[in-house]
Amino acid sequence: MSTSTFAHECETLIRERWARVCGDQPTEITISTQPPLVIGPYTQDGLRCPHGITYWLEPTGEQIAQWVRDGVE
Image 1 (cartoon, helix red, strand yellow):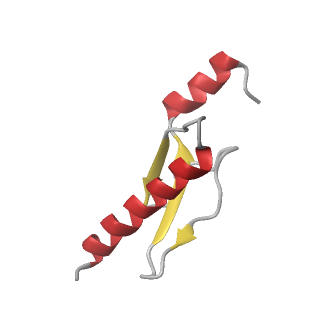
Image 2 (cartoon, helix red, strand yellow):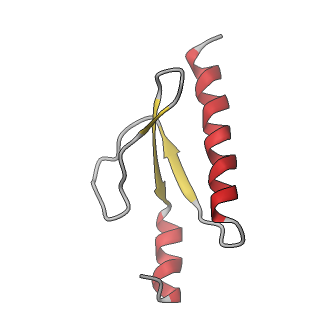
């Protein structure tokens, strides 16, 4: 299998697990195999899958804007 196949499967698994963690308060996230260009308050270390690919997860800009509108800290 190619790396892109592994990347797709692992990204899907990460999204599914994230949805379960969030439960009834879904959070829109961006998942990338490239580290963020800017380190922000929501930036965490990347997650390395069993295939050796590192993924970074961050809330989308829209999600952050919604938190600001809702007064979430």
